[in-house]
Image 1 (spheres, rainbow, N blue to C red):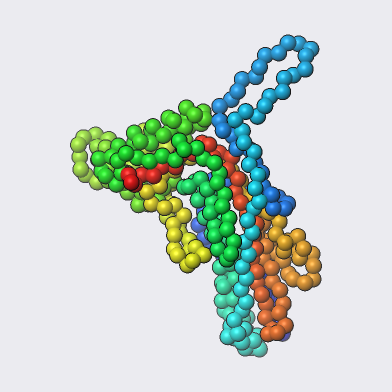
Image 2: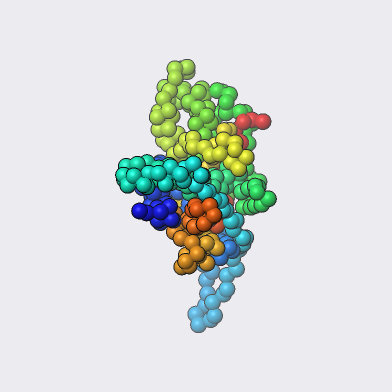
Length: 345
């Protein structure tokens, strides 16, 4: 008869996550940021201050080439944060498992194991949510700030003041000129960096301002109409008028204090350039470095750099499941975005 040690392993947990995660909808951050892995805790990248090319200087023949300085580029270097949390199977559930194991009936065993794996699945899902929270914080504030469990991580990615803008008239006012506000920000970023924004992100509530806007309704209907317009018609109009596609992002997470929060807050509208914005970097966790090849614990790696570790406990007989991650996104395209506060406050 199999024991709890045989049934609850890191490899089984990651297999369960892979199967179940295939059914879930992808996160926006996965589309905007690449994913890579590196050794250690240090992260550095080059943040370009300009997207404009600098012409190559002329030279005489048979002379040493002039050395070009990295004008307008900043090297960013920092340490990546560490995240770790664990769960144990509670006594009642462990006793249920013992009872169904005695029956030898696979259906009963699978039912209890699903409950156990669902609990631990939430840890891996939490690692995923933390990554998305960090990436969405970057594109809505230009910074990452996390404080919990006696730890505090603050990262400022150095966006310019001209990249954090506000409107003179709140977009919730139907008479606001939303399209001209956006056009002005797009023109300014293109003038400054040579790269014109082609995408935008906002919450569903913020997008409703477009749907209710008088200027947009009149432009779509071609007259001074108060008739409602569809969201699809608004998206098509904005794409045609500005060459801008808008993503409405409604996903939420629960923070360390147990509060439900949106990844993209209301009244924030972010303009983004084409292509990837940066890279989500995983570091090497202590579990991967020291335990992956040991007999002390069972370790499996999922989602490129999330370590799932199961450890046998002998008193009481149990299995401890731990999920750990070292992660921080770089933001090479930081200079090419615009974060707008459209509340008018």
